[in-house]
Image (tube, rainbow, N blue to C red; front, side, top):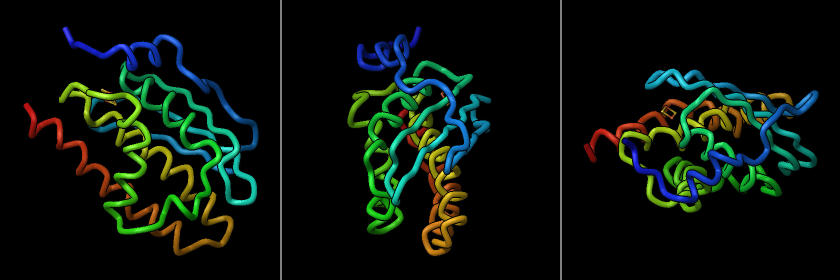
Amino acid sequence: MLELNETIKEHFRNPKNVGEIENPEGMGTIDNPVCGDTTKLYLRIKNGVVEEAKFLSFGCAVTIASASVFTEKIKGKEISKLFLGTDDEIVQRLVGLIENELGEIPAVKLHCPPATVQVFLNAIRGYLEKEGRIDLSSRARRLIPKISEYYKRGEEKD
Ligand code: FES
């Protein structure tokens, strides 16, 4: 039986920001190739700042906890600032929003937080494209497969 810490359990039992946003500025989905978990993320964005984020998920406890934390932490963030630095710095910044809050995650579940970040990048990519921010949208597109490398952290720990 998988041991999950209290923070993860609490977000799983009482997830924040579950639901949809009507006519969202950004919407992304993921069907995780590792486990089949599915998550949809909706973003309300005004003046380049994330005002609201909501999600729907058919996923494991860590996926739901990750989406709950991420949708909380991403609110109020300026999108251009999230993309400052190298690709690795961006990925660590985004994955860190979840992992710094959730604490220790079982090795077999280490792909769940990066998968949530992939949904976000999917959602933000479309928004940036519409806004004509081709530089940032191409970067977001490039980072989506790169984050899959983070999935392997769990295998290394096994
Ligand atoms: Fe795959 Fe959680 S088990 S995203």
